[in-house]
Length: 435
Ligand SMILES: Cc1cc2nc3c(=O)[nH]c(=O)nc-3n(C[C@H](O)[C@H](O)[C@H](O)COP(=O)(O)OP(=O)(O)OC[C@H]3O[C@@H](n4cnc5c(N)ncnc54)[C@H](O)[C@@H]3O)c2cc1C
Image (cartoon, rainbow, N blue to C red; front, top):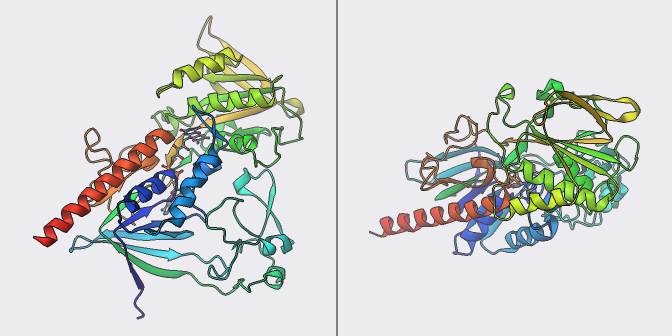
């Protein structure tokens, strides 16, 4: 049997979101050799897909792109994008061995120059998941304009095999016969930074997710608000109407025992307030309502951010939303139980309703790596108070939302801490070997 290609690094970082990139940069700056294994075709995680970030309202793309570029150009960092982590184990000799599969892009990465000629030439249009499925992309494409690496990939599920991309490619990079490539990474430490995904919307039948027009997720609203968003402005997706009334439903998929998600996702109050503020700038005449159970503005400057939103005229209704249905004329009907005043049940209709969905882990290590998870399914920290980036697998550390819901500030701080723990571990390992 042919043995797999083996590559040696000091640390493997799993996940190239902001947590993984920060940990990789902090280690690489200390001269450790870092491999970043990312399953997506680009690094950047959720942060590169956001519009602006609370509480500073910095443009997300403007502050994430430099970190992505710094990682891509760092001499000590190698990016392995569009790669699946098959296993991550610790050997008897205290080394970490990761088995990785490079998924085929059907484009030769050594030849592709990111010119997008294949994309322009492709005749197949597919709903673009990067833009909340609001507009279309081609069957061969670069995920977005500031994706790193700038390499095209073919969506074979939708490719019609017409051959047009191969004809127009100036470097002959299209390879319809590309195969998965399996290889092994050996390292001394690993940092798990596998992040999160949103609570699946269809788990809550009361919200009729997927069946109600103009009921969207918070991530879809991030795309509607983004400068390079699908429409370059905020409109009601079903008919292009400029919305007069927009509502947010808080704790949609968090603090909900019926979904098995009893925890608070920590960022939803703040991102809803942020989006509401951005919307009131984009649509000054629109009414914006936030249905909430209680507002958790926990970070530095966050309470002031909340107060500013109230001062801007955003309406906060203390209520639990019980049902969301399709109203007439493409309105979304929200039925809620008031938690203030006389209480009671009320109904209102809005042009657009946003579900502030919670966070669930994006990766389940079962069968891949023996690291444990907590009852919330996020990776368990073995010393949550005094060393929150330690897992129960020696030499393996955790950073960012992989360990539990958190915002970008806490994610960056934790990534730095994970890098420091990994660095300390490797220095101690070196001393032991020298002795
Ligand atoms: C709608 C919304 C708006 C938000 N707005 C803000 C805001 O304004 N300000 C703020 O501070 N926070 C905000 N947040 C929170 C912010 O998005 C997170 O704090 C941040 O993205 C966490 O980064 P991360 O790297 O831990 O995770 P992620 O961004 O999820 O990155 C994880 C990466 O790991 C990769 N990955 C996963 N599994 C594997 C695997 N098995 N192998 C290889 N790679 C893998 C993923 O593809 C991804 O690239 C918002 C969140 C949401 C949902």
